[in-house]
Amino acid sequence: MSQPQDDTRVAAPEPTHRSRWHRFSPSMGWRAFWSEIVIVVLGVVIALAANEAVQEWTWRNKVEDAESRLRGDITWIFLWSAEKYASRPCVDAQLAALGLNVLESPATLKPAPVFNVNHLSLSYVVRMPNRPYRFPVWDALLADGTASHFAPQRQAFLGRISDDMVQARSNEAETRSLMGRLMVMRDPIALDPVVRADLLTQINQLRLLTAFEALNAQQRMRRIADAGSAPTSEQVELFLNASGKNTSGSDYSGMAYFCDAQNLPLADWRDYQKITANTQFPGAGGKKP
Image (cartoon, rainbow, N blue to C red; front, side):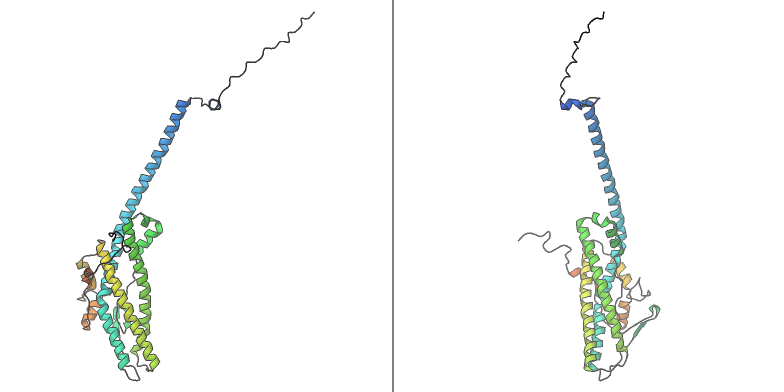
């Protein structure tokens, strides 16, 4: 006879209540866990700081290299500006003579003398500087982001020079157009009132344009000198080439020699030292009234 089975079951012990925080306790313990977190955070901070230091060092080297490359461009801009300013009285005298010729000629224009630059294959009735007015290094620095790492005041100075070159190129294009139209004065054309007025308008337009450009050139030299980027007087005199010893072209000017040979006046490029030019907006850095 089988023994009656005991239906009494041993109840499983009630699970000990654990807080939500303890349920997710790391196996290595909280002390070790937080130590790992601190090590990781410190590693990330150190890596970011090191990366930032490397970037800062890289940009600083790029700026230093850029400054050495900009020096050449700024020197050329100063030389072109010196030529533009110094030759303005000579150019104005030529244009004044053309205007007088238009006024004094009878029904037929007395042909103006034509000057030739044989090695350049150019002819003209008025000679004036002809330069590219470029600032290529700064344009490249703007494109690759280096420009933004220059000191703010230096950025303002270089940006102003860049804007000057844009305007100078625009004025140069207009100047060449007017010079080309005035080439008609080498011929004995009929002068009715309309033709006479048109020629005088073009001549005076060119006179005003060269006057503004000379003023801009003078102010530009002042700004460059104030920034400590002006070339030496010897470099300027060598470029202006007053003796005519060097062949005129991209490396040397021919204006001073031409004007002297024609007994036409010249200005002293050093006149920029007599004026002031502000590279900031009005009132920047000044005292309050």
